[in-house]
Amino acid sequence: MEEKKEDILKNLKRVKAISDGMSEFISKVNELKSGMSEINKRVNAKERKIKADAEERAKREKLEAERLAAEASVAEEVRKAVEESKSTLNPKEGSTRYIDKRSQYEEMKSSAYTFLFVGVLGILAMILIALDIIPLHMAAYMRVIMAIVMGGLFLFFLFIGVQSFRKMKGLSGEADSEETLTNEILTSFLDGHTAASIDASISDAGAMENEQLYFYRYEQIKRILSEDHPGLAEDYMEDLIEKIYTSLFPDMI
Image (cartoon, rainbow, N blue to C red; front, side, top):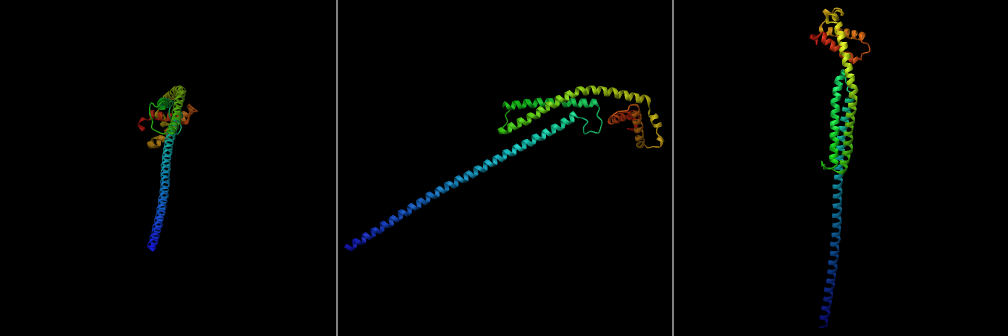
């Protein structure tokens, strides 16, 4: 009987030991699960941060690309405006053909009105944009860049327009003087010389082809103009020669 009690006690102790071991095992498993959950949270937070950083970087790169594109576009517009203003204020620059003062005056007049109109209209548009009457959906810094650059461009247009009007006053008088001088020179030459007299001053003119004769006639007219009116500008003289030649030899043009 005593032996059975001892066996029962031993078995109970073994059961208790196994139960305590299972409890400890379960506790360690729970600790491991808690640790894995914490690791997963940290990993997920890290992934979210990496994703957010990538999205922010992509956004900044997109804004920078838009800014560079806008600056390049504005710079190109400014370059075109500067080139056009140069041709307006210096109409003979880059041209080998003579442009008479009257034509220069009319061209400058047209350009002056165009620059003033665009300048005033552009500044009014910038004011309306600044007051948000004309809404523009863009970043704040882009609005500032556009206001500075485009505002400067429109002010430059106004400056060119005003400068053109100032030059027009002097150019109008020059055009009147040039027209008077041109009429005097043409009248004097055509009254004193004829097609026959020009050809008579050329040796063997009758045996020449029209193409060859043209150059001899041209040189004779140029020689007479140089003697009668020394000091004429080369391009102005060439224009006079063409007008005289057309009047004397209309069938040869």
